[in-house]
Length: 114
Image 1 (cartoon, rainbow, N blue to C red):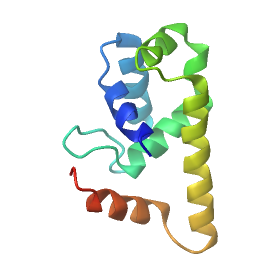
Image 2: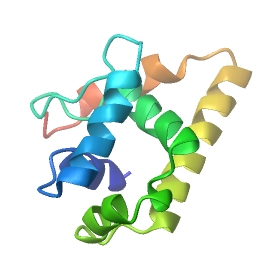
Image 3: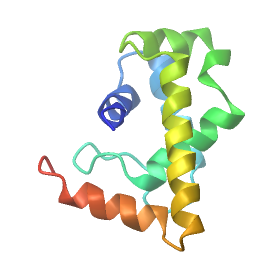
């Protein structure tokens, strides 16, 4: 998903409110790999942390965070789509006995730009 690249860019955005929102999401992650490293790209655990944080602390409730997202042309609909795709993929893989994190990481490692 191309949105993964802009999502990672947002985490290092110039807007302090947006950067803070992403930092808080990642701090709240209790799973290993729930941090962003620009050399490693977006891990499945970091994605999971961001989606979970958005459920309890929606960026749409914070105009200052939304201003930073809009600098990257990211709308609430984009965030909703990302969360929906994440949940659907996780649920479908779980229903077949596969692990979302293992599949995601295997695909991420296979990407050329890594």
